[in-house]
Amino acid sequence: MDTVLVTGGAGFIGSHFVKRLLKADDVARVTVLDALTYAGHKENLGEAFLSPKLTFVEGNILDTALVSELVAEHAAIVHFAAESHVDRSFFEAGNFLATNVLGTQILLDAAHRHGVTKFVHVSTDEVYGPLPTGKADELYPLRPSVPYAASKSAGDLIALSYFQTYGVPVSVTRSSNNYGTGQHPEKVIPLFMTRLFKGEPVTLHGRGEHVRNWLHVEDNCRGIDLVLRSGHPGEVYNIGGGTDLTGKELTEKILRVCGAGWESVAYVSDRRANDLRYAMDWSKIADSLGYHPVHDLEEGLAQTAHWYQNHPERWAPLLRNPHAPTAQIRVAPAAL
Image (cartoon, rainbow, N blue to C red; front, top):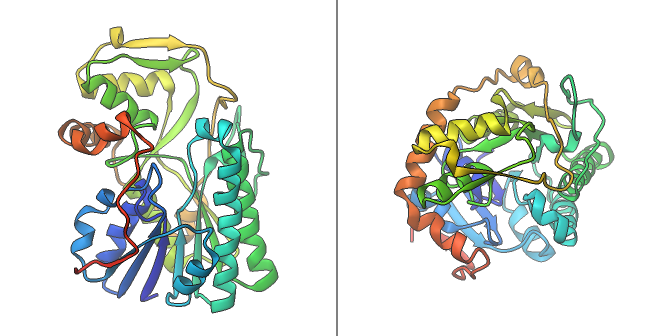
């Protein structure tokens, strides 16, 4: 596993994972392939560019020729690249299907042709759909309720089919909601924090009763790393172990770490197709690979709030113009 291609490596979770890989003694080279759309930014990689192990390629996973060229040079693939925001999928479903389904298939085709030794497809707990009670294990039916989750479900199934049909060594990870530093401010935790730091109100959907599990991004990356190294091909691994919170409970914690009160909160109508509860059983990865999360939610939220408060240059431009074009880079060795 000395050479690893990471798609979407300039995104939130992907960039944290890349930094983790670069510290590993058994990894000689990491190539990031990222289209640098609204949620992908070279700044997320930051100090990673100091590593001579890193190569950055600006490009799209829908570019068949480019994907084939890069996959041929790497032993393993970790596939983060995706359109990932639920609300955007209501209005841009075609983009979600193209990237999350066709893009995944293009990568898998290249992996099959070039004989990669491991392919980790990174997915989400939203593929299971809402669970009024109980928890979804890896064999639970996929019942997505929004276009984003449906596109990820399709990508999961295509990935697993390439193992069954062609023997491509694919493993799938599904995590709960991630939080941490560097996340795009359209997501709820950085959205609330940045608005509160600007003295603006935040909005809570419905009665604030929707339940989500919140997992620190570094814990998720540790789980993905375990699957990359020791996960079995053809298997799915739920990565959970965070903290279950209603929207109201999460808001209360964010208000506390940002030094704000409930006068900063306005209740609004519930958003479209807002699933009431997600819940996963993650005992498989704990028992088989020794995964356990280590980050405390209270400390993690405080650290995250501190980062956003002290790095407005990273998020303020995104709030002003989230679709602004980014710098053009083709291939840039990290040492240069």
